[in-house]
Length: 440
Image (cartoon, rainbow, N blue to C red; front, top):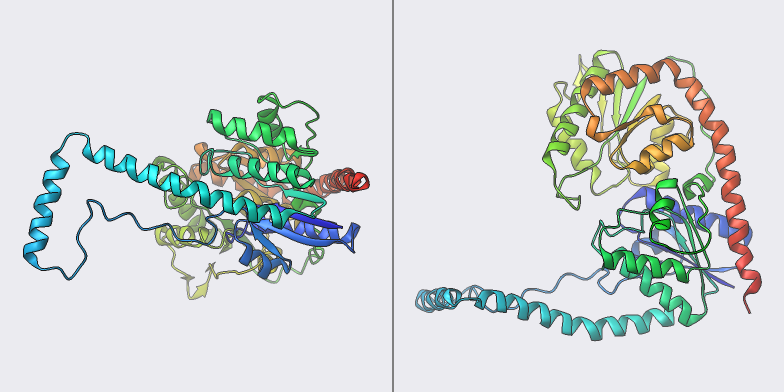
């Protein structure tokens, strides 16, 4: 028996990697003799991190973009000044011809498209061979049902072509606890709708995601099952320790609406967000807390942490003591150890919030999308989520003071919800692995 796990992972996002780890862990527990493989965005990273064979899901994986063609470009370095001058005059004359620049750009696009077709066909042939013999392909959560990141030719087309490959190879496909939306383009909606029509099982991690897919007119069941990370078995958090140290608040920033990372740029959101976190961290230090910044996206979040700290009035030390800590982490295990040492957390990343919940720590979630609000409502903590559009320093302070007053009770209430969520995931795994009973 061969089981594959599919995900847009390998970008140093610990939340996405935890999804893959959760699925692999549950597969091994239920089917210890199964042959495992994965299909991911960066297979080299997956093989190193999860110790299983991995194959690419897109033909551009690991390849640098081709250099632009030389037409209308500067001449190679080393040419004499006279030829360079002649080239400059010729280029200026060519650019003065009406519509010529537009036609050149169109020709480049057509040339790339013409080259892409045989390359894509060759990639599909390789992917067919890689997938052939796989009995079950598990698409591991995350916000993959969207065209906001990369347009319709990003997530939607990738999922659609792999669904077709699965049909061609006789592989059963299960979509597990996925997020959905935004879906903004007709083509993106078409790809996602057809993808889910081809699936043998699908579920969504919250009601927003479910409603997004129901709105597409996809027939059949649309179960809502919690995020897969809730099914990840990790050692339980350590018990409470004597209050011999200062309390520590963890802050988890991210580059939300910053165009170095985000699909769109909105300085009216990002600028106030960074400054509010900086002022909030200063306020925490003044109140006697230590502050521990931490990332869950190891490539994108640390620069934001540095930017937040640059706006703080307090330096890395305060009255001769280290009160603001921002040491880098490199693995999920290190992240868990950091969270376990915290007393409260203010998280922006969706999985930064989720990791804190499963480690039984009181958390205030800054919601950059509704999925974070939905997550907090699922665990009965909706009042501890704040929309990023309403984020101000006074709002953060007010919510945090309320969290201080009920932190222990919140953690206990979350623990009761977690038991039910894990049971729901067990039922889902039962349903999905039952698909293997009909494999010929």
